[in-house]
Image (cartoon, rainbow, N blue to C red; front, top):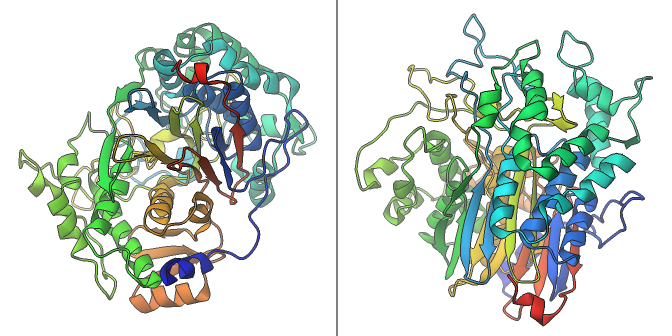
Length: 592
């Protein structure tokens, strides 16, 4: 091992990895939240119940897509602060038989009544965060069910309805409130939800608290069981009929009613895309196109490859890693939005000459002030769309999981309701997203120019979600990774890729590295996992450091070694677990 890698490993915490939180009595414990190496199928999620559900589906002969559907249906119930059927997400799928990649886009859309000033009050001031979040204004058309049913039609094996049964069983029999879910109320009390009708609907309060105002230890959700029954018969019934009407009614309630309509739901359809990819170190790394922000992951890697990264000095490596982030975030913040509504200079952003130009700015001391570049100069058509400066913040109500099935197919999926409990409004036993607050609430900059990510009818808000799949040079599967964490997703995901590919770490070691998030002129460093030497060296390099007491990452990774072994990594910052599933037999391996 080189001295550089030894030093990097010393940056890891010396404390043991966090073990999995014990599952409730409904679910058998599968495996502890530690690195697992085995020649099997594998599931890694941020919740032990969801991991167990994915394990159950793969053991029954399901594909990676089948497992993803069952996992997300369960997460909607047991991890409602992060994702659910009332939200959306992105799935990157690798099909082993023909070595192809597909992206399923279930990002929410703004209703037809949306407009650029929808988050401005009558006096022109922007709604406060909680006012905007906990409102009907923030609810976009949920895309999750449409996305999952589309992926199932293409790549599923077990019957659609069967995949919803584990979640239905949990909803009917009840599930224990997990330590992480409880921790939100321990930290914030009842401020997370409306407690009076003047603040908004009381759905969430009544769901979590009993008549005496005590947080429930166990939750039964028969409304959600009924929703699963409805869509088990036909997933299109999510977007029409009584369930759709209940979603519209929830969005239409005062205060701050939204404009979501039955027509908006009926017209929604998930989308299927080709992945966008970046070659890096003899590998090919791929993720979703806009409105996902995966392009920023590819840009940062392209900048690093244009330098002498990695170097023999680990602190120089951290500095270069940090500067590449800052430059990529600046371009992402300015240019990335729904590319069906605004022009996004994708060719320019990923152009090697452009990235080399940006990488040339990386030097000591740290760049004092970060600005976006001009990727339009590297676009084939050479015509620029000029946008205002965007300061949108997207929050961290998100989850990520990865699955590799017995046929070698893989899913990397990130899902969200945007912030904690989404809009806090409920329908059909589900929390409805507040995804439209991912648009720029201030739609114009100081010069009055519209920003790329302004709200508009039918538009998908920009997302930081960046589920990633890595391929070997021969097109075979190498790795799947990704994370929740709002704007920080880009940084978290990038860390794992650099950790494994460049620094030679295991998936678990890469996950355990301190999180370093460099968006703008302040660099946030997870001080609990960073050494004092690392913090001092980064300050000496010239960075303005903000020490973070905790980070909201929830990384899930699977790495496939050359001999076929799978190795997982899961984030000890959440409740994640890893499950391995024995391969059934050789004949079945040839089915899909």
